[in-house]
Length: 398
Image (cartoon, rainbow, N blue to C red; front, side):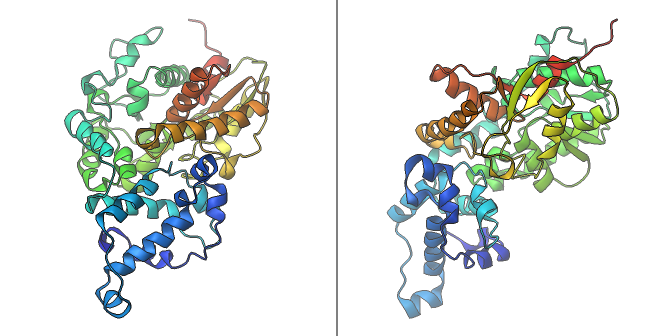
């Protein structure tokens, strides 16, 4: 392990933990397993111990030994059994930026060769095919063929004002492809000049960051910036909160960036979208990377309130306190059982609202909640907000 994987601020913040264990009280992994070793407070105690064992002066005066390979491996297993949802950071009274610290810790474990080798698949797939699923990247925009009236250019234009960055999950997962299909329809109806990148869209790099493979993101970032620049676009929109957060935090600020909830809310305010009444009650699930990660809580709710006849009922845990669905942090790859147990707690809270549907704004949340409901034969309608907007659209007669 190496101190070089952490910023000075992160090293200082490690010492700010008061061991209050408030992070453990809100951690979805701890709640699901009752295992305190998955908590942030345990992770920080062990991290401080490991960091001190590295310092030559500390070892000389206090006899601290470097961790064994077995100790590092055991610690690593607890670090990766985490969705990176950020509730620990939200609850920390010391204000420690825990989510960023966990990302640095994962990178540290990779550099120390003490990480779950399963995550190598992410690195290898992206290096080979430019997407996390090792699919043919030339097929990234094939979902366009399922539009009711697909344009001849397949929404891949030479130039456009707006680039819609689809993301790997929505491009390839049938469960999630309904989202780009809905959004393309909505953007066309609003008269937005947009284009896809098609095969020139590469993974944004977010799965690599979450795996501790930050070193492998530079080429992805450079390529995607060049691809958007080549389109002459000034704006990039995302339906994926993880792609959006990755671009906001790690890409150079060369374009206006919008999560689709913000962008659609602006279209509605400008009168570019009209809606027919829909008699239904929905509850909204705040995606971790959109809510806690990007602090966007109001735009999705403003859109729902703009749809005539649609009633919003909040879950007990909402906005910054929203429960994670279990789909983040590459957890499904590391511990599918834990991911499913976390999803159960989310679905139970959804069902308690008696809403007709749970609406979210993330393809991974849609996929995770839908998969859990289907596997457990739970009758539950899961919609992305783009789908809800599409269903209420009023289109001009041609």
